[in-house]
Amino acid sequence: MRVVVTGGAGDLGARVVRVLSARGHEAVAASRRSGVDLATGAGLDEVLTVADAVVHAATSQRTPQEVDVAGARRIAESLRRVGSAAQVVSISIVGCDRIGYPYYRAKVDSERALEESGVPATIVRATQFHSLAAFFATAGRIGPVAFALGDMRIQPVDIDWVAERLADHATGPRPDGFTRATDLAGPTAYTTRQVLDLVAAHDGRTPPRLVRIPAVGDALKGFSEGRILPGPDTELGGQTFEQWLETQPRPLPRRFHSPT
Ligand SMILES: NC(=O)c1ccc[n+]([C@@H]2O[C@H](COP(=O)([O-])OP(=O)(O)OC[C@H]3O[C@@H](n4cnc5c(N)ncnc54)[C@H](OP(=O)(O)O)[C@@H]3O)[C@@H](O)[C@H]2O)c1
Figure 1: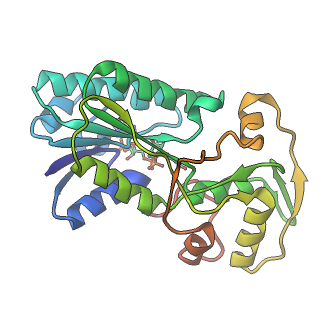
Figure 2: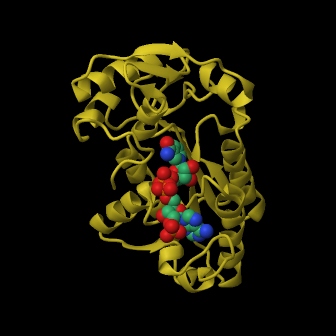
C-alpha cells in the first residue's frame, strides 16, 4: 500500500514511516520539508493523488488550529478533489475533550473536522509519550529541587508502539465513515514523585525535593485531577516508562521530544 504520513519527519511520524516501510509498504513522508504545507494546502493534491491511506501525524504546538485542525480539513478536501477513497488515520490525545488547554482543544477540533468531512477516518487517541512524562516532571528542576504538579498522575505510552498501532489501522480495513479506535496507553500510571525518582535513579542523582506548584486554571487542574488518565476500555501496551528509560542516554536530556 502507499501510505502518506503527514508530519512524517516528526517524532511520531518518522516512526510510522519506518514501521510501514519495514512491513513492505510505500510510506511517503509529507511535511513542509517535502513541499507539503498543511497550513496552506500547498503540495497536498500532488502527494495524495495515489494514496491508499493517510496518517495525519503533523502538528504544531504554536499553530495547531492551522496544522492539526485546518490541516485535517484540507486533507479531506484534497482527497475528494483527487477522487481518492483513502482513509485518514489521525492521532489524538486521551482526555483532550476533558481539559481546557488550547492545544488539547485543537485536538478535539481536529477530530471533529474529520468527522464532519465525511471521508472514512479513524481517530486514535494515545496518552502522553514517555518523553513528555519525563519532561513534565523534570522541566521545573533547579538543582536539588523540582517544581511540579505534585498531585498529577500520568500513564505514559511507548511512542514506537503507538506508531505500530497507527500503521495497523492505516493498512487495515477501511471504515465506512468516521470511527474512534480504542484508546492507547502504557501499562502503568505514575505519580510525579515516581517519575522524578525513576529519572533521578536513571541519571545516578539524588532524587530532588518536590515543591508542589498549585494547579491554577482548568488546564493544570485537569492534569492534576487525572483527566488525562485513560479509561477502563483502553488498550494497554508497549514498553513501561522504566523500560523506555533504559533505552535513553544518561543523564536524560531535558527535552520535549525523544530522538527518532
Ligand atoms: N507528544 C506526546 O506526548 C503525544 C501524545 C499523544 C498524541 N500526540 C500527537 O502525536 C502527533 C505527533 O506529535 P510529534 O510529537 O511527533 O510532533 P513533532 O515531532 O513536533 O512533528 C510534527 C511534524 O509536523 C510537521 N509540520 C509542522 N507544521 C506543518 C505544516 N504547516 N504543514 C505540514 N507539516 C507540518 C513537521 O514537519 P516540517 O517541519 O517539515 O513541516 C513535523 O514533522 C501530534 O498530533 C500530537 O498531538 C503526541
